[in-house]
Length: 257
Image 1: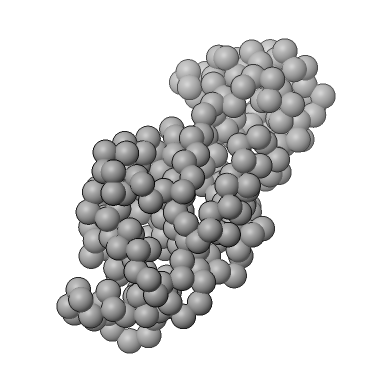
Image 2: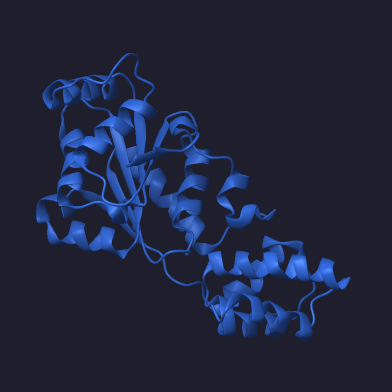
């Protein structure tokens, strides 16, 4: 159930952009807030939850902050549907690069992981945390609560991540920082897009706002999709700038996002 990314390391910045879009990382309000929050979480060796709907930049913001703050101490797990505690144990065994075969008994496995996590400070990132249930969150708490482990834990996931944690006071009380990701306001979208990709250089802010209302809805993943289609359309139609016909052609391909 566990899929590690780059053997548990942070991905390269280019890999954060959906569709492998050749775009720039922009210092949006959400990204800068994430940087401040993760810095505080690391300093406190605490736990943080970054949550919100898909496509609002959680993973990109968390990865960007950790590349700056803790590139050599971050260990990252990306979850798939329905991970169990066993899956998390085996995922940590893999991304921590532990030698030999995983222990067969849970108590021995946990002892090994705790000993490893006590050797030096690490930031453990659990991405797509919305797939976890109560017992899986409890396992992270179990590792963090141990007085010998030297870790900070960052959960990044959808709204269900928040709901599961908030239903359990023992878990919720251990979260140091909660950060909710929301849709980007129109004015910020209009100022961000020209910095995000050269396709938007010189485009009227009014056109960007219109596209946001019609298709992107303040969602950066949607904007990346629109940008990729615009790139393709400009090449296909031999255009050097965005016009209304091109925008309508993109709308016809994205099915009213």
